[in-house]
Length: 554
RNA sequence: GCCCCCGUAGCUCAGCGGAUUAGAGCGCUUGUCUUCGGAACAAGAGGUCGCAAGUUCAAAUCUUGCCGGGGGUACCA
Image (cartoon, rainbow, N blue to C red):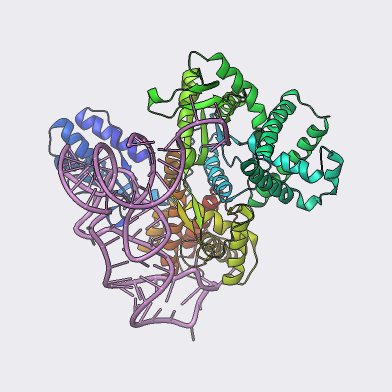
């Protein structure tokens, strides 16, 4: 509520000659629509009793057009009750475009080619989509990017098993693999290769050797040798599998950065800074973290190959080159927190402004319960698709309907409603319930609101003068009007969960209204329809920001 | 050992410096309505906000220590 904030600022200036940036919060409904604690802050500064200051300010603002009344409470809070007109005017306010004209790069999901997508990837994808959408709503030009290891030990492991299965470097034999089974086949190869690496000394040596050869293939852009043909073909299979999956969950990326592309810029930056930022130790190039109270990490290993650290350095430089971002967000699991701290510290010494513009968001673990299968064959991993399948199945059971939009909405909402950072438990049955705090509940809420509007005459214009809201209408209008602030807060805190909490509270508020008040056919139909319309719009808007499907019918 | 994250009702989680009574969902108890597609609604039981100090006019929220759980700690990512 910028007008109120401005009015408050100038009142403080006029009365006390001080500049303040007053804090406005949403108190409990009984205490008003907005509340401020400026009087307490000023009290300390001016050496006057806070309540006295509060009284003076409240008095001064009493007559503003948007204010119905003011109250002073407690130690010196000022509570503002908005006029009905101000409330209705604010109904469809949109979040402020604080990122207007800025470019924000959001990196998330980051699956490795040649491996399966697991729950963790699903989680970052969902969180990343929501955060990217929020920046867009705040006016930013957003680039959604995805980083993945198309080179490295896991690739060599997979490739080793691929060669075993093909009986040598025979690319033509890849045609025998059924197209629908490509990703599954590769996943099996990875598992086999991994076992071989850990168990057999010969295999291990071969895999290490293969690793170097694959680096060379990407470095020299070799597309013709037999191994290169196998590599590029299977790599493409993997990317196809990702693309299909993202399409299914409604994610899209502007750019995939394969690790192989980050190698060169990364190596260059690290090598140029040996002696300055990095140092040689035991045949490797390392970053000494101890001085910064961090871990020491290897950037170039004793084989002369870049580790993930160097590729991450290269990636940040590449992102900068491609986008000249004002802000860069990286979303990963929290197991990588300290690792990323080291990378960012190293970047800070190479290109300080890039580190300063970068924010690393970490999330916890998803722990699925009841009905989500774990693949023991793949090493007790929970695949992303297994989570979706479980939700779909739960939806069939509970709501006797098959609707992937509902299952997907259920999973997304269940993941997003938790504050990012801590681990949480995912229960498919609960996620899909039409009662309680769930995605389908909100989807259904929207469908029913639309249904009311469709049955109506379509006339929901407000009278232009002398309208007054009844208490229940007022309460609903107040809640609807919070939307923009909630979005702003969520973007500021990088917490989509705020949006979930709000949407659910909004739907509950509507329920209470709907239970007691007739809409269609009532003498107050037009005003009420106006509220329903705004409510439906806000629900849709909010769900879309979360990248949750918004069905018109269920 | 050192470092990071987490610890709020029986369960799953919000709240992350402000309001007499710390919230929601599920589960439990009682009541209401022949429902604009119950997405029900109303009332109730249930909490030493892990423990202990400190900072503050004000602490679940900030600081420190401890306890419990998870993660990281040189050539994996």
